[in-house]
Image 1: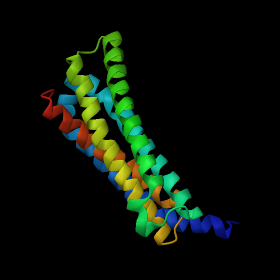
Image 2: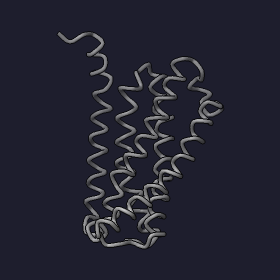
Image 3: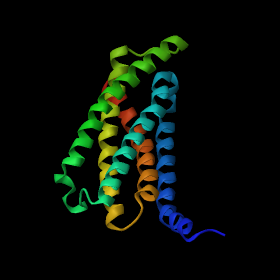
Amino acid sequence: MVSREAWTIIREGFAPNLAAMALSTLGGAILNSRVEALLALPALLLLAPPLADMAGEFGTIIGARLATALKLGYIRPRVLHRSPVLRKNVVALLITGCFASLYLGVAVLVISYISGLPLIEPAKLIGVAFVSGIMLVVVTLVSGIMLSALSIRYRKDPSDTTIPVITSIADTVGAIFLLLAAQLLNVI
């Protein structure tokens, strides 16, 4: 027999998980729309999953930290923008995002070289990783903040509602930003 708590988790998490599946599918469709360009430059294809994963993790971190702070009463949803707790977390994650994006670009460059994949100019590949990574981190941080505050305001458990949506936002927006950054830097 399923407990009352389990039914609450299922009820609260059902719609966010459906939305997450739809968003992730959209992200895959976006990447599929440029599959020829990505197959011609496998380093970009290699960059897509860890980029989305990194941003999803940052969004999840901010979502979980804010949900905890909101639940414990350290910050209130209505004055979230004035919170030093929020400011410190956002600054720390943005700095970490900058270094992680650069690291990701270098790692993909090294893996591409070792694997014998067609090379992209190192500065351009690292630039694509950095630009798309930072844009993606900003979007997932904003999403995490908004979703955490909304979850608390509507008395939903952020673990059931926020995290699946943030990770799928990272998947979808990650695909868009990867392609956008590659176009801006004349890689594709």
